[in-house]
Amino acid sequence: MTGTVSITVNGEPRDVRAGTSVAQLIKCVTDQDKGIAVAVNGEVMPRREWPVIGLADRDQVEVVTAVQGG
Amino acid sequence: MAWDLGGRALTSRLITGTGGATSLDIMRRVLAATGSQVTTVAMRRVGHYALGGGSLLDVIQQAGAEILPNTAGCHTAAEALLTARLAREALETDWVKLEVVADDKTLLPDSVELLDAARKLVADGFTVLPYTNDDPVLARHLEQAGCAAVMPLGSPIGSGLGIRNPHNIAMIVEQASVPVILDAGIGTASDAALAMELGCAGVLIASAITRAAEPEMMALAMKLAVEAGHAACGAGRIERRWHAALASSPAEGLPSL
Image 1 (tube, one colour):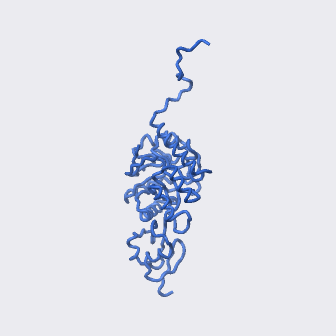
Image 2 (cartoon, rainbow over the protein chains, first blue to last red):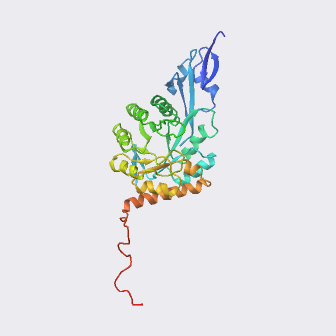
Image 3 (cartoon, each protein chain N blue to C red):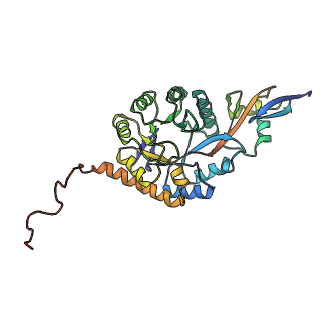
């Protein structure tokens, strides 16, 4: 599809508009603002850089938060 | 009496794990009953767990507890390193409870990957609290790697089998110059008291409290057990003797009856 990139978000394939930033993607994935972190292709993306990091074709994105655990 | 864990002065010696609580309300009541100042969380994909996210963090914050993210589910040093970095970014803490397990049946630590991960995390600026085997030699290596504590298991995670090798725990305590925290296997209050009597600086308990029939009541029992065991350790117990060695009542002045 023209103008889109195919990425994987938390193990699920997803097409997003070319030029979509990490910050824009996060808003689509969760309502939660605090307590989350993002890795793209195994690298942690600092929160302050989310608005300026663009997603590229075949990027593997993990969006995580704190849950119960011993 | 305050003690130091990773540069923080704590008064409670009971660290509570949030795993296993069936509701946030139970978690709230457990944290209040234990008086824990540190509590653990795991890192998972957003949206997969009802008892997670912002609301869990709010409960912990309201309880006034320090958050200790773990690397549960990691099988390699590389996975643990990424998980710890994600936790640091999400939760703004450089504390990490390092767990690198060998398999999902025993959940026993993979000693080789654990030590590798500990060295890398220390080098990356983390305050590393490793869940480890009850192996005094490995504990020594972890301390030398720069870990802020060593956290040996009493028995496998969630097994409730108590402390299977008290002698090893005592040897770890004897040699360690960082706090020793008994991390897994506690089933009931006497196990927690024993850990403290062996000289541990603290205990970490999740399942034994959260999966008890009455979690809040068990939370209180564990708090009291940890305090009792710690006091007993400091008090210096009497020697064990095979036979009665010294009557506690005077032998003189016994009336002729």
